[in-house]
Length: 104
Image 1 (spheres, rainbow, N blue to C red):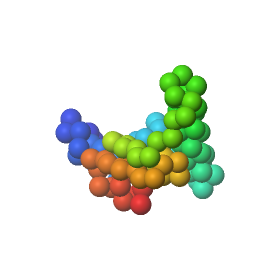
Image 2 (cartoon, helix red, strand yellow):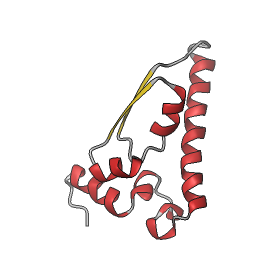
Image 3 (cartoon, rainbow, N blue to C red):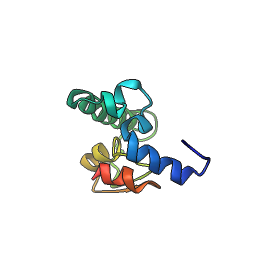
Image 4 (tube, one colour):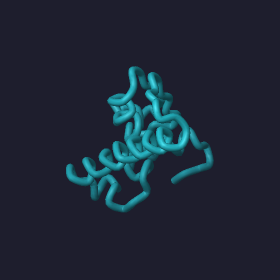
């Protein structure tokens, strides 16, 4: 199915199995994805962003308050969505239009 053209490969993931393309766990396959699992998927992104900010504040800058975030390869928005709740502006980019459609 995948041919080595990464942009085309990611477009196929986005069109057929977008959540699994981001987190390769069987429970996130399109055929297995329930509303509860989808919520779990996005909760894992919220937890990741919170943990990342905690680490930066603990180890680098206790006053860290980012204003802008860039997520390159945002997929379906697992991290871009919680980033949007934490900063003034998020730029989310992905090579696959189908992933961006799902993120919207």
